[in-house]
Every structure is written in C-alpha cells, then in structure tokens.
Image (tube, rainbow, N blue to C red; front, side):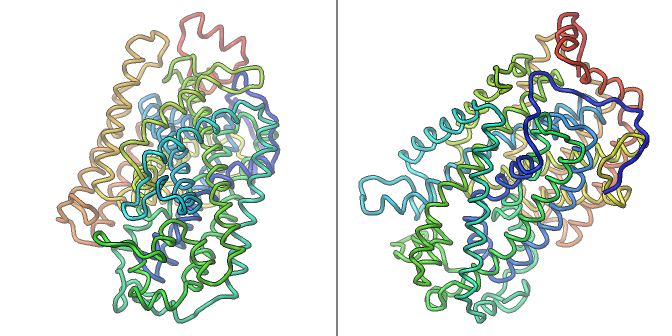
Length: 573
C-alpha cells in the first residue's frame, strides 16, 4: 500500500451513523456477501454448461473482479461514506451519473436478498421430500412453489428484524455466521479432495473449451455472468457500503476489500475443482457427463438428478458415501444464504441512505433510530425486494439480472477513480492502486464485457428496470426544490453509453433475441473500443476540481450543518 502525504481535500461525513466496526468486522461484511448461495449452486451450473473447462471461467471472472475490487479499495480509502458505490460517481461526474449509478447500486442490493431466499428454498426442499403434499421447490421446473414464496417472504422479514440491532451487535452476529460460512466450504474442499477422480476432467471437452465435445469459448464467456460465476464473487463492495460505520476506515477499508476477495477467489476456484473431481463417475457415465446432470424437459426426473439439482454439493457428498458431510452442507444451505441475504438488506438500507444524502431519494431515507440504523430505508428495501419475487421465480432466473445490475454499478467506480486521479492528484490515498492510469480504463472495459456477455435478453429487461427507476426518481425531483440540479450537458455520454451497450448487445453474439451481426471475437473488440471512447468522454465531461470539492464540502458537515442545509432550501449533495 502507498499513501500520499499531502491532503488538501476535505472528506464527506455522514449523519446519525456510528463507527463501531473494526477491520475483521468490515472484512467479514464483504466475505459473508461473497460466500453465499453462489458457492452452493455456481459450481453446478458452471459444470452443467461447460464441463471441466468451467475452472477457466472461475479464474477469468476472479481476475476481473479482483481488478474491480482494487479500484473500490482506493475509492473507499479516499471517501469512507455509507453507500459508497452510489456516491463516488456523484462526487466525480455530477448528478446525472450519480443518479444513474446510484440507482444501479440500489437495484443490485435490493435484488440479492430474494435470490438468497430462493437458495434456501431450493436446498430446503430435501427436508420436505417425505411429505409430497408440501413442496417449496420444484426440481423439474427449477422454480419455487407458492409455499416457497410464502417462506421467502417470512425469511426476508427475519432479515429485516435482525437489521434493527445496533451495528456493534449486528457485526458480532455477522462475524459468527461468517466464520461458519467460510469454514464449511473449506471443509468440503478438504474432504472431497480425498474422493477425487482425475478421469472426470477428460469429459465434455476436458479443460479445453473448444476440445472435442466441449462447450466452446463463446459459451464459456456467456456462462461467466449467466451461470452465477460473477454473481458468486459479488459482495466485496459491502465494506464500502458500510464505510460510514467502520473504525479507522482509511486503513481498514482497503484491507477489508482486498482480503475478502482474495479469500473468496481461492475458495471458489477450489470448489469448482473438487465438484468436478469428486462427482461419482458412474452417474456421469449414465448421463453423458456433466452436460446431462439436469432434469429432462419432458418425462420423469430420476431421484439422483433431482437431488443434484436441489442440492449440488450435498448430492456429491451423498454419492461419495459421505452422509455426514451431506447433512452439514444441507444445514449450511440455510446459514450461508441467510448471512448473505441479511447483509445485502443491510447494504440496501445504507445505499438508500447515501442516495438520500445525495438528495436523489427523499430525505426521510436518512432517518436513523437510536442505534444508528436507517430504518425507513431498511423497510423500503424489504418491500421492494418482495417486488422481484414474482417475475423471477428461481435462483437461476434472477442471477442474470442481479449480475448485470451489479456490474453496471461497478462500472461507475473506474470512471470515478479516473476523475479523482486527474482532478484530485494531491488527495490522501491510504491505498493507491499501482498502474491506475492503465487499470482504471481497463477495469471499465472488463465491466462492460461482463455486461455484454450477459446477453441481450437480460439487458433489455434491465433497461426496463432502469427506465422505471428514472421515472420514480424524476417524480421525486419534480416535487423537491432541494433536489440537486442536473447538468444534462455533462451527462450526454451516459445516454450514449447505455444506448450503445444495448445496440452492441442486440447486434452481438450473446442472446437470445440478438441478431448476431457482429462476428465472435470482433464483438468484444467493439465493446473494448466503445468502452474507451465512453471512458475518456466521461473524464472530459466530469466535474471540475472546484465542483468536486464543493460536492464534498456539502457532505462534510455534521448533523447541525445537514439540518441547516435542508432548512435553508439549499442543495446538499
């Protein structure tokens, strides 16, 4: 880590939040979000689509996410504020970008809790198999049942209730859960390594995606967002979202972010290795390798495949005659998603708080109780989370939308980092990413490639959500004289960016519903060139140093200053 000695820029400050979380608590808030339902299902869906070459997908995604995490580590150390991912673009690029990337941040956070509940229902069906009249998950359709919806709502209500604890108590509860969540995958890796079958790695094209019978490179890139691989890595930014409650944040935030993603990447790559290596060879021979480990669209699904679909790692342990490990994994299927869902509901409330501090959301979102919990924002996050249950009735269906919204959120961070490097070179950076002039635009390209790989069908659905979000925010702006003024001339690049990514996706190779007019490999070159154009256009249109410092100053006051801003009818950022 490198720190600059000159500090001429003030820092934003938050009102009502309490700094009660240390380094371990901050790192575990990210780790508990990384190790969630992704580890329970990501390896299965990746192997189902790619066979043994799924290992490369995890490695590619891991490198991509590490680069994005390092960008967030620099930003979090510079400006440790609640809902950081929603506020960095506001400070650097102005209100137009702030509104957009802030909404992406909130949309990503609000949709993760429901997806974690789905994971609980999918694994939990095992305990109800002896009662055929009561089902919470249908392995044939891959969707939760109406009883699954009911239990999902109950589980989300529990997430909300626990979030009303004071942060120091919440952090203790989360720490205990996270130690368990990290220990169980590590235990599974160690034990399943003793049940290893090297021949499994020669099936379905082996480690070469384009080998005989393999899935191909195009399918590999497509599955990075669609199979839940990127989704599994999501969560490193949670320490940034809770930055307003972290002790000594300039040092602890970068360490927490970097440490959590390093641990998560190692665990996920090894989980894919042992999932492939420990799968029963007889089952693979009967079903044509990993590509056949799914229920048929017609006819009856065998008990073995039903168990694999409902609980991939528990089924592997059971087939390896490790019944004790299978039971532990089925218990963990409640704890891991629970911890992640609970943390993301926490994150949703802090992002809503941050957007209200930016004056994009009503000021009521900034209200905190005596424990420093932004309770209005928390309840609204719970209610909107329920909205995403009906259109997306399964874990797999919701993964693509969550991943695309998340990576759009991440795309704002490299832009903000590039602006701050250019306009605030003398600001204190407790962690400074080496080679930032190269890695900032490169990180933006990476984010856009992941968005592109998600496919046109996912992007147009996300586009609908974006339009609805804009309408809701603009309704608030029309009735709020204190809302920040938007300099639309500075935001033209943003409209071109969003529309351009949609057009490239429609003409590209990843669908369905795409036209395929841009050849494979050339399509990714087009995305990279387009990303560079947008990156430097955004930097050219960014806030000046004076505007950035003014925006920071507006968020640097204490509670009295905040109330004065509101009372005077000014426009606090």
